[in-house]
Length: 458
Ligand code: ADP
Ligand code: MG
Image 1: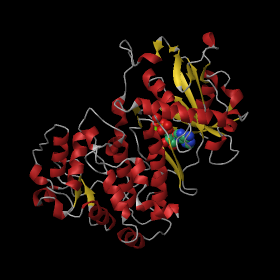
Image 2 (image 1 turned 120 degrees about the vertical axis):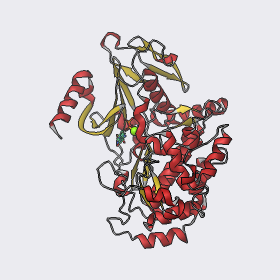
Image 3 (image 1 turned 90 degrees about the vertical axis):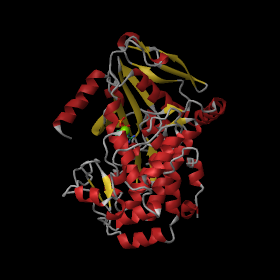
Image 4 (image 1 turned 45 degrees about the vertical axis):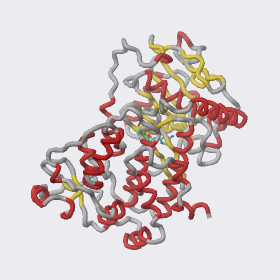
């Protein structure tokens, strides 16, 4: 463990009294805009015993300790903890095992999930592996959506997957929200039932968030009774139960979530007011597209308009215009003639195979930050104007992601034949996820019924 990380962990022990007695910090495993995540050992085994059924390795005492930064708004912190609590009970959603706060710093304890990073396996997951990945993700989402919750940030780094055991778990509810018009009666009954169920299994603990603030050591920050949050203390004078306060001076750093733009549904890109849980299904479609075409990241644009242009190059501008009209918007682009009118004639199937055959590459253009470059679907004019050196998407490790041949010898040709023939259902699933009209887009539970997953039920 590098020196800086050791120092950081030492600082955490100093900041949080009592932490040392319960958790042995081992390493830092993640760092985002809103948090740092550490691997730790649950020394006394309290949490790992109670939440035993959630751990992938029976008897494991490894936990993930998520330190939520103070720059995160109190509303966001409260929101994340509350939703995590509501979602306890599904083994494909990381449960909130424990939480503690000191002043305005909040620490959440989750089971530790030994997973592989997406960029290390997306190129060579066999078709059955793709099915298992998707199955796990859709199971998690069908549970989350049944509570009326939209995750809002579905992407590979928020879904921890272990290709060896074929298990996955959804994390990071920092941006999640309740769908406003969701049938609440239904939701509450549902969530109560699952909490009761969970209580009988894991000895219900009425106060899940302990407050270690010295002046106020005995009062809990969040108390949950009958599945509802009934008591909230304030954090540094900010009452967490009352939404985002007007006099709050800390800025919300929403713009920093830029990395996730490629996963946004069209209705999000078009800033449509009434978004539903279907926005997550679109993101699943983007991930499936990445897995099938063995390209990651697939979309690169830095803003919402560019994202729509990227979608134009695949689906054609007519479809985007139709979608805009659905949300009461117009869609005009000055260089419309450069863009494909109808996209790939044989849809996503053709697009995926073009990417796999390397007939289609991703290039940069002076007029558009990115386009999928194929001679046929771009005007000659734009094709000629394309940059000489196409800028390839880069993975976080800095490696170009054009390599479509898996390092473990999973043959590309064999895979391509498989998705053309026996496993062609993958394209039906893909099309159902990447449906522009959210009402027509399939739900997670509908997708789980697809014949694509038959192999897993046999
Ligand atoms: P952020 O809000 O900063 O994105 P996340 O909850 O997504 O925080 O966690 C960031 C990263 O930390 C994840 O992508 C993952 O690599 C790692 N991580 C988070 N939770 C766990 C866990 N329970 N087990 C193992 N690794 C985890
Ligand atoms: Mg995250």
